[in-house]
Amino acid sequence: NTTIIPQTQPPTPTPQQNNILSMTEYIPDRRTSSDRNQLRDLDVLYNPVKGVHFTDEIRKRSEGRNIRFMPIGGGLHGRDRISPEQVTTLLHRAKIYIDFGPHPGMDRLPREAAMANLIVITNRSGAARYDEDVPLPSKYKVGPTFDVDEIHALLVESLGSYVDANATGTATATA
Image: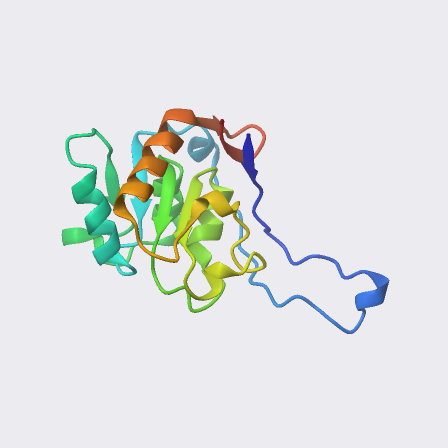
């Protein structure tokens, strides 16, 4: 079993770290009772603005496999901004969040996806290569080369073993 537990608040420094504070962004918990009980009818969510050329390759590879992809956004191709509440609702409808963008810093969407009990799959670019910024099991950090078949296989495996654990607050992919 792989359990992903997101960091929602900065850690409390130990006495030895009094002069060092972790600079992390607080992410509010926007879940509602309806989000917690939402049917997971989407398989894969993605950010349509970041790494979309990689995502398009994965979507092409997954054609005919009955994998439902959905961009996080509105309008044609999901490129229009949506409210934080709409993002939360989408996250609670999905099982997996993929992000193959450049990760210039500690990105918010992968952390929000983990909070919503999604399995998060990223590349190893930028901040995503550091466990401190994107704390995922190495299995869910693909690369350094982009292998469409490897990622597709990981999606299929993760979808087949997805267990929604809303009650415990963790998303699990059983081995």
